[in-house]
Image (tube, rainbow, N blue to C red):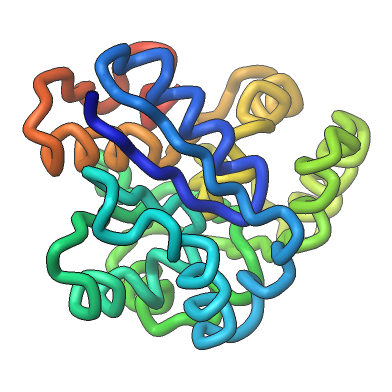
Length: 227
């Protein structure tokens, strides 16, 4: 049986591991969720990289694939891991590009560390949108603990719309944690919003790396990149 390690620092990794469990019954999923060191994945790439390397040490070159679902770690260190461990296959979550490139008011939910990367800045420059980046590090621990409420989400979104004087037509999730609140975001906006995430792209990359059939088309099904 194929073995896949899913590495993350919190609940986003659990969500993607659940997706693999639901979609692929022919693999063994090993969840390496480094809860204890969650803060170390949020600030400096070298600290995040070293912490991840320690967590992965028992599995390097011993499993069929390692999936990195921490967006900041994947963005800053995926090439590093592939270069240092050429015999080990890696895939990592990436920033999703909506399929329709039109002028829309868009909000990106992300972390402080991610928003400061060069790759994120390049990503933003390629999106033909009126775009607002919302840094929401304080939500991560609340999502991990199941304590982020609809009222808090609603309040933050209302404050954003009032301050920026826009009503967004789409939201991009640039942190795996935020997949946990997709349904709540839809409810807050009365389903009048499109939500994009990277889970389908990462799932397809996983299937491709393992040469497994089962890729999901964008915008289709429960785990579609747009809802």
